[in-house]
Length: 252
Image 1 (tube, rainbow, N blue to C red):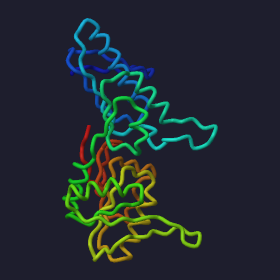
Image 2 (image 1 turned 180 degrees about the horizontal axis):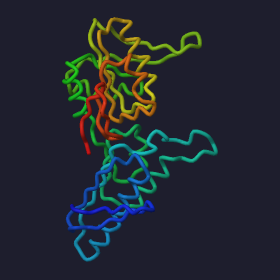
Image 3 (image 1 turned 135 degrees about the horizontal axis):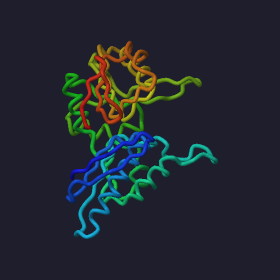
Image 4 (image 1 turned 180 degrees about the vertical axis):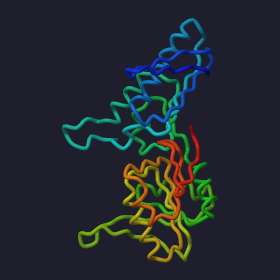
């Protein structure tokens, strides 16, 4: 499917369809601007199809905006993921594919949606970091990482954050045996949880601790995390990185 996008100085975007084949639109989707561009493309394509036999249309979103706002956090707050999902639903794509969504709520709210599996990228990170021990950072991530560990025939060690005497503490359910570790999760924003977990792992004998995240945001930069993490593996679903600490796998 071929189309052209035009950006105007006032922020407007416009789309033109070059041919009338099946439509696939792949966007980062981490901004409202990306969603409006997808809507412009879909509207132009729908019009181009008005006298044609029905064709398939697919929207691929690599880093869904508002995916962590998967509930109403306070009684009078907006439900941001629902707002985004309603907008996507109004585009009426035949299929919406979302890369490693933060929770199943995204799939429940968006019509005709399915997951783009992050397993291939975790597998690359696993091999590139020398087949280390996989670490689940919390109870919520364990089930999915257990599936991946089985696929990779890799060893897995669950971690969990609990409160002991009112203070947060990380508990590990197993032995490190002086092995390098790879923490696997979906999103890294500030990175404090990963830094604390890395320090715990190293205090118990892990020579090196690596991190894989599908969506590498790091809104506060990498300076704070560098003393704790020996290498980061990620996709460029959220942004492109140019830093020696990061090995990035291209998706767009």
